[in-house]
Length: 555
Image (tube, rainbow, N blue to C red; front, top):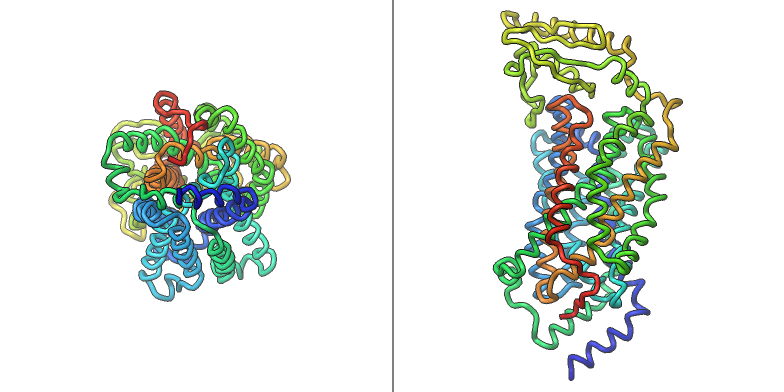
């Protein structure tokens, strides 16, 4: 009787409290995505500031790897804070995660660079990323659970979809702040010290978020369990030690979250990197085009969330995964044509081929920045092309053949370093790079996209098409995960698959995809990563993922 009396006011007060509940939960997720996009947008600057001891290409990959370190630890955070959330409640758990996440982001703005404190700089940076990732591991599960447990039956997809829109809000805040600061203080000042300002300003968002969250009451579902004495005493054991629940954790990961993660990170993150580093569109233009596309696509988060309340979560998520499998390659090829038609024409009319014996070629990926790739003629040829983002194919040659680069009909032999002194090798490599560079220019390869030839409406339309798959896969996800697990172990159970999916499958996408491009020379090869993961999710999800949208969640 007491439990029913305590739960009733919460239920009756739900409608008047809806906006505050959704806003408070969403702000934390917006903070998470603000940091995520901010670090991604500033990866080039962070590479220069904290990894200046290695070459440019490797420094950029290391910056992405440091970025990914925060994702690597997210599953641990989901276990730690998920357990706390199921033991002591939703509200106080995500107050802790909010504070830790925000302070870790803020501290990056004060961190001395490599030139100031040497190797300590990247070490501290990675430590801050790990703390931020640990906190984020408990943030999303708390927000999704809290909102869903307040939402009326039949509207959970709609209510929780507002949490998903915060990914775009976080990106808007990061993009607009970066664009505005560049215009206000100039690119030189921004590269020197201005990049720190967005991290420092995050303290304002943290203060607002904490203030609102302190005013919230506990989830009515958790209060009901607490009053009835039915909360879990060992949520980790119940969630992962019993096959009856563990199997749904695995199905949620492989048949839902993994595909959503790679689609989401491809659309909202890889797209920007592709425009800037492969299509050679200047950063300001890339950012503006992406913002416009996101403004157009963002309302569809709410639409797909609402739709999932009508036709189900599974149908929408699986459709997005299948579409991604069949459309990512043609869409990104179309993006190259729209953003840099000169590059697309050059690749078509004067394709670049490296003719070499495969046994004499190294993998063009150096995570510690120590390899100069000048021990063989093949390495010398591929290193130059990879460093400059030139698309090339490989042609096998007999053992002992000196590697050559073929640009259309022009063939340029790479220097054979065998028997050359260090100085002679350096001169030969420099001469080779000059010759290849001139041949590329003559063949029509641009150093950067011509602003006058960028088809801006088409670029925006292509990004919107990609984003519709992102919103369809992501919008119903929170509601589906909440509905999939029992209330007593919900925070723990849903947080782990979400953060393995988004932290590992999604978080490592930029590093893996760009390493794949660098290793093969094919500018589209990195897309195989999201395509294969989305395909796996479609198969597992269609076969094993249950439909949940009619399920009651207060038991």
